[in-house]
Length: 142
Image (cartoon, rainbow, N blue to C red):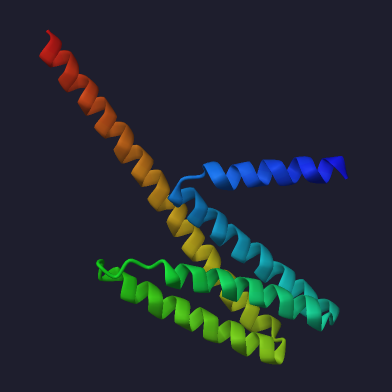
């Protein structure tokens, strides 16, 4: 029991101190985890496990949709993808279809991997900006 409280505190702290980009990555990871659990539920014939985990994925996708910033045109494209994924999740939930869940899982993995790459490029860009700022500061001091 103490170990569970320790892990819960760690997980809570991780979420509370994460950047928005890290939180987005955590949501993608959660959606992937729950989609895998839904597939396991379908394979085991555990309808409730499949349903519960499909709903968790749907809730994460709904959160992504709710936080889209429409001042950027790409938000419409993301909304279309999220709407498609939610429809496929509804289809999978109604029929408990493993193949549909595997399709959704592939989309989620692709989106997560793209997000990781965006984060990597952003960090690389920030590092270059920091180096340029330091170089300018050194030149101005000289």
